[in-house]
Amino acid sequence: MQNRNVLISGAGIAGTALAYWLRHHGFRPTVVERAPALREGGYKIDVRGAALDVVSRAGVLDAVRAQRTDVQGGSIVNAAGKRMATMDGDTFGGRTGHDAEILRGDLNRILYDLGVDGADGVEYLFGDSIASATETADGIEVAFDSGARRVFDLVVGADGLHSNTRALVFGPEERFIRDLGYYVSIYSVPNHLDLDRWELTYVPPCARR
Image (cartoon, rainbow, N blue to C red; front, side, top):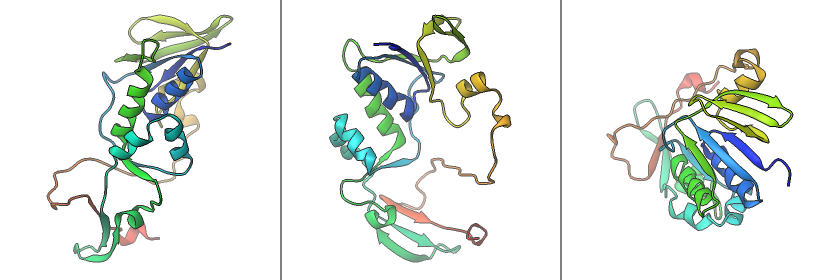
């Protein structure tokens, strides 16, 4: 098999999932991640449609369903906090059948554990990043921030929206990015509303245009 040694930049869900499947098919994947460990938390993810087939083929559908958020329902509120509409969890989330809603960090941990299982598991390099990547006759010579240098057959950038790998290969993202003027901010807060597996949504008038 050619191009067996593959470097993946980023240990998010794209990176851990790709690493598992490459290893499953006989490749030797290495994942480099600038964070010192897997990133915890993150927003919820709906595993549905084709994704259900993928996690089932990977043998982790039961693990995914065991860690689903189990949201019971949700309400639309007005500016005063009054509930204007209430739905059950599946209707509110658009879930049907075997769909499973799971936190990003929980899904990533499942995929990571799946990939590192066994003596020939996926190699993870935490606390490091790609400093440069140069294509040569023997492959792609990669220099890491740690000072280490290695040669890979293929390098995959799975390091997010503002990809360091993509910038190294193609140039600054400012040359390609197109701002659509849409921003989303997601973060954890104390449960001051005393919610138990319940969602509240408020859409201000300025966002309804």
